[in-house]
Image (cartoon, rainbow, N blue to C red):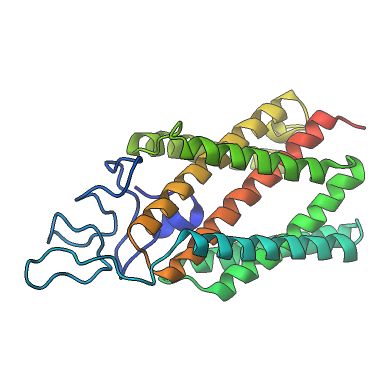
Length: 290
């Protein structure tokens, strides 16, 4: 089962040309289950627990897990680097670019560059730290300008959005670790159906807004309807996070290559950016016109 995250949905943590999405039959509690390794290849040994480990040539059983695989420390370190780059880019943009149409144009340009870099990375067979850091830098510029514009009209909105993002993502991680949220194939199918429908509806709403068919942004207005849509968008962002958590958990458990931690950082950053932007809009809506 693939993660909903744009990065993981392309190929997930992989080995060679195969896809390594999580296996819904694996129990979430305890360790990896025998025969449920999502990284296993082919129809060879049904009891393989780690395709990256050398096989016991005498008995054909898996040998102990090799060293050098992805660890949670690797994921935390790469995520800190990626998010740190986003923060630095945002701070520089906020400091150096005043609120103006020109700055807004630069922000849109930065967002487009970040989007292109994300697409290129998602189609690469291996993670590229340069592309990922580049994406983070341009995304940071976009977030810095947009946040400054929101702050100019709704003072303190970016700070509240950051706190809200931390609270929501922390709560999502806590519920996942407590197994209150169980990532199964059915959970992923239902969530992805809702997420895809949501994006399609928003795309249609954007087109209608551009051509003047709806007023005040339609579903993305700064009224009660916009607040409902914003809350749903944040919930979808949390759904993305749970799939990312599961993907990372499997990668660590089954010894995915160490460089795959960059993909984990990339995916988490994209999910957190999604939540922050929606949280920023939601804070502005509840702040009113003050």
